[in-house]
Amino acid sequence: MFVDRHDAGVRLAQRLAGLAGEKPVVLGLPRGGVPVAFDVAQSLGAPLDVIVVRKLGVPFQPELGFGAIGEGGVRVVNPEVVRMTGVTEQDVATVEERERQEVEARARRFRPDRERLDLTGRTVVIVDDGVATGGTARAACRVARAHGAVRVVLAVPVGTPDVLARLRQDAEEVICLETPSALWGIGVCYSDFTQITDDQVAELLRKASAQPEVMVDVGPVRLPGQLVVPENAEWVVAFVHGSGSGRHSPRNRYVASVLNQAGLATLLFDLLTVDEEYDRGNVFDIELLAGRLGRVTTWLADEPRVAGLPIGYFGASTGAAAALWAAAEPGNPVAAVVSRGGRPDMAGARLPAVRAATLLIVGGRDELVLDLNRRAQQRLRCENRLEIVPDATHLFEEPGALEIVAGLARDWFTGLLPAG
Image (cartoon, rainbow, N blue to C red):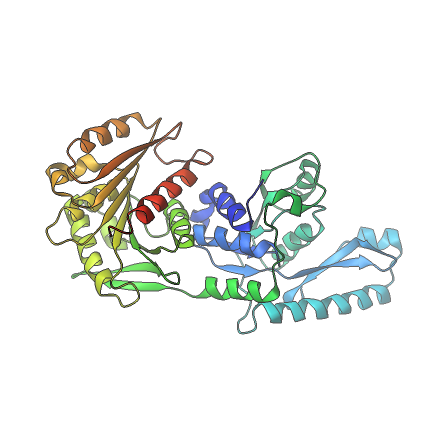
């Protein structure tokens, strides 16, 4: 069903894109759930942490849990199971002390130099690489709520319908991509199910907690952004958002994560300040947005972490018009442009002056925008191509559509590398 945990994570992130507005906290169940959670957190622009829990098993029947414990002294006990099994207070204390030591030891290994994230009043997304019996996931949901979460969403790539139904008693929402009727093991659902080590978990948490935030000076204002530079990066791609969007766009974050995996650096940034966005005229002022993008491009060319790399633009909706407008400016060094559901027609008479190789991606069911792109393509004099994603609408919300967009963009940039 899945190539590896990264594949599962990016696919799960697409299903969870609607949660970005809730500003959630993403918690991975160690160890296998953390790589999946990492991609979900990157796509949502959310903080990532682990949720370390241990089931409290009945002494003479350990697989039967009478409760669970988590960090910070959080403890959840099911009195009904305690009563039915006749577990004594001494039994409870003995099991709890043993498991508490294990919780604390694991927490120190996973994040030796920082505290766990505060969940008070937050929406929490708990992620694992799959659920077989659901015992650990259920414990995690209960512990997260005990830590103050006001809404718990459990998200997994695979699980059986009966287990998922039971888990809905402990989470407000359960998201699962694949639901086979029988599941003999999570590993059989992955081509690559390599065991994850404690060190790998710690490294993913460290990487997620590093805030690659930058402030780009564009004259009258400074624009916040996020610059991610993989090791040995071969391109740097600036994301140009459409109307009503910004650097936290889950769709563009998803595409950026795919480019990062392919070794491309990415810059997601806001073209307007918060105050400027209140004036809707600014949102559709393509000349203003293109001017800002030009200054950001100059900043990228001088930024030591990416200086000397070929520069690309990835524009969505009106952002694509700003990208093409900027690319037509004399002296602009941009080497390639990708437009996702873009409005190249809004770049108007500037289109024939674009020199950067341009890829136009449009949904097959986005008929009006598709017609506008076909007309705009006829005015382009640079290397260009129009790709139509069958059955996709303007926002590419259909299953697998955004994944196709990301793959096309990645291949466009990397395929042009020798020329760049």
